[in-house]
Length: 238
Image 1 (cartoon, rainbow, N blue to C red):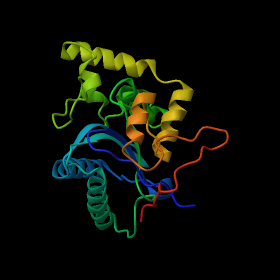
Image 2 (image 1 turned 135 degrees about the horizontal axis):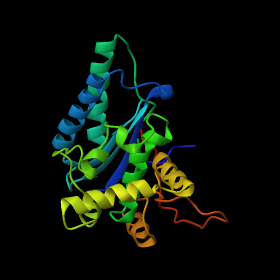
Image 3 (image 1 turned 30 degrees about the horizontal axis):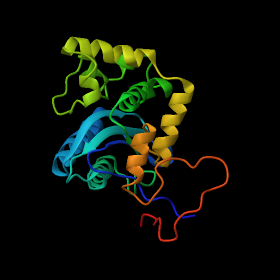
Image 4 (image 1 turned 45 degrees about the vertical axis):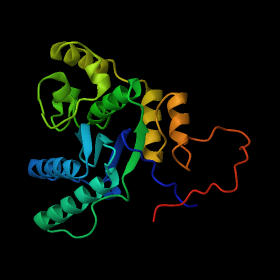
């Protein structure tokens, strides 16, 4: 079965995941992590993509980004991937790809869904057992949004600005949001949508998004499928 074309749209937030092949380590040391962050910043600027949040794990990376009207997330990810793999292989004496296929991506409504995606990202190091507490993981944007590790290159999304009228109020509110955590059902739903490419948002957001693309934006509901017009075609990524 042909895989679905990746869902993308300008000025809509993307929750992106790129994973190491066979879940192998994609970072050997902190110099590798700093190099990847540098490539992210450079390619995001070159491709007109705003980076809101990120988290770097042993075997994968998650980022939350919004392309500007002329932005291109795919070109950004290709540029980062090629440059990082070349540098990583040269430094560590290896050959071949580092990534487990193409990056995965979900479009996210800029409201509570976006905040849940950020919390999901910040909680991943704890879920994977890399740290015991969220604040102990420094390779992510959690510190930026809680005030302990400011990063001026990140673009604060609107839902975070709405958390409070002062930096202190926003930082406290964001920390409380992450501390509350996510239910097992919420965690599983976000992971499934990102991995399979389904959008996250309310019905109106999903309907509006569906009008801009020829592919489905959410998982088909159980039951008899509806008939579709014959002139609609979904083409695989080549």
